[in-house]
Image (cartoon, rainbow, N blue to C red; front, side, top):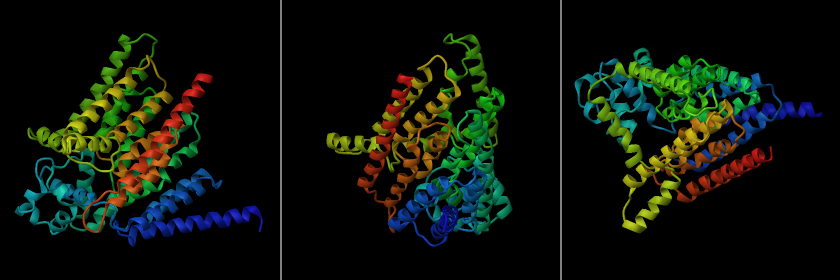
Length: 454
C-alpha cells in the first residue's frame, strides 16, 4: 500500500469516526457522563487536528465541517438547558409579551402563556435560575427566536431545527467574510478551520444553539468593512453584533487608535471619525431596542446583567483565587466585591490597550481585541465553554494559538454537572487555567522577543 492510498484510508476513517463521535454526543450521551463526554470530545479534537494537517483542500475541509454540523440537525440539545429559554422568549414575543419585563416564574400561571401547550415543558426544563430571572438576550436574538416560534409553534423539535438552520446560515456567512479578511491580512486561509472545524464550535453553536456564531457573523462583517475603510457599514454591523450578544461592546475603545490616520495624537479627524462610528453604533442599538422599549426595561435588564458580576460563578480563574482569600479573610463569599473589582480591572486593561499607541494597524487591532476578550474571560466570575468562542474567533486573525488549547481544555468544566446538581472539580479548573495561561505567557514573551530582534 503506497503513501497516498494509506493517507486516503486514514483520512476516510477519521471522517467516519468523527461522524460517529458527533452522533453519539448528539443522540446517545447525557451531560452527566463527563469522562465519556470528555474522552469523545478529546478524540474529536485530535481527529480534527489530523484532518487539518491531512493535506485535504480547504474547500473540502469546510464542507466536512458543515457535514459534521448537519449530524446534529434533528437532535435535542443535551449539554445546555438554555435553548428552552430561547424558545420561551420566542413564544412570548409571538404572544405580544415583552421577554425583558416578565419572569417565567410569574408568567407560567397566566392564561396567555398556558394557552401554549409547549409552555409547561419549556418552563420545567429551562432550570430555576433562568425561570427566576428576566431575559438578557438582545434584540437580534429575540427576533430569531420569535421567527422560529412563529413558524414552528409548539413543536419543540421543529423550533430546534429552524434555530440550527439559522446558525448554519450565519456560519456560512462568517466563513465567507472570514476568508476575505484572512486574504487581505495575507494570513493562511486555512486558519478559518481553527474555528469552523473546532469541536467546541460544532457542539456549543450547532448542537447547543448558543447565539455566539450569529454575533460573530456580524462581527466578521464589521471587521471586513472596517478594514475596507467603510466605517458606516462597519458601525452598523457592529451594532448588529452587539444586538446579538453584548460582548463586542468591549471593542469600541480599541477602535480609537485604529481610526487615527495621522501621527498626531488626538487629531481632530480621528476624534470626529471615532465619534461618528460610535454614534452610528448607538443609533443602531437604539433602533434595535426600540421594538422592546419600556421604561422598566433598563432597570430590569441591568438587574439581571449585574448578577453575572455579583452572584453567578462558574469555571472562573482569578476570581476563584480571590474567593479563597476572601473566605480566609472574612469567612464568607465576597463575590459582590471581587466581581466588581475584576470588572474594573478588565476595563482598565482595555483602556490601556486603547491608548497605548498613537496609531495601530489592523493586525495590531486584532491582537488587542484578542487580548481584551481573553482578559475579560480570565477575570470573569463565570466562564461557560461557549463564552470563549469570541476570543477563539478573533485568534483566527492572529498568530496566537493558545485559544486552541483553551477550546479543548474548557470542556473540563462539564465535570461540574452531576445527575443531581452542580459541583465543580477545582483541580480540573486549575489544570485548565494553568495550561492556558502558561501557553499564553509563552506566546506573548516569544512575540515580544521577535519584535525586539526585528
